[in-house]
Length: 274
Image (cartoon, rainbow, N blue to C red):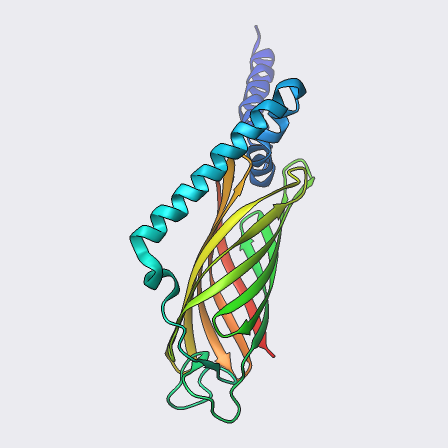
């Protein structure tokens, strides 16, 4: 083999070494997440004759598991820990409206206080090759109870030039266990639907805490888990919020675990109260 042939062979080897990693990682995170989340539904379709008999067993197992979890949680925390007392509360017009009320709740009915609260927010999420948007509407029809509708849309640009999409929508019923002048704490249950080839809904629960530390700043933290097929979606949020009357601006950190695949990044958003 002459020098030219050796040089040509080395170039081919170098190109192969550089190209192999791109082949291995051509599948993006969102594509892998959808594959993991839809694994049980795709495997069950391969044997339709046995799926109907095992489905009932699976449903019984899952239902029994959730019942056991809630019974143990109730026994451990107790009624008082989960629900507390139903003392009368009202909503202040907005955080830091009064000198002695930093947060959302006021103890007495003062002129300007409300019996219900409607909030809407939207944020932009970025994590390297993955970006997304999240919109949320929170309506508390009474001070202790509220409904929350959340839609998350993520997209990822792949090396191949294609774009993967991941969309999920949650509907939650929240119970506001902590309703103090500087702290709001809640837990909720509901359901999450995942589209884009997963096309499955599952049970969800969440917990959250808002601390109105000092004017005009508050701190938000929340965790939500949704059970989709044989996997789950976990979301952790940490936010720092700046309040200006009925509008809030926030920045923070989001961590998603989508079927075991971690996606974490930063968020910027705004919130308005009605």
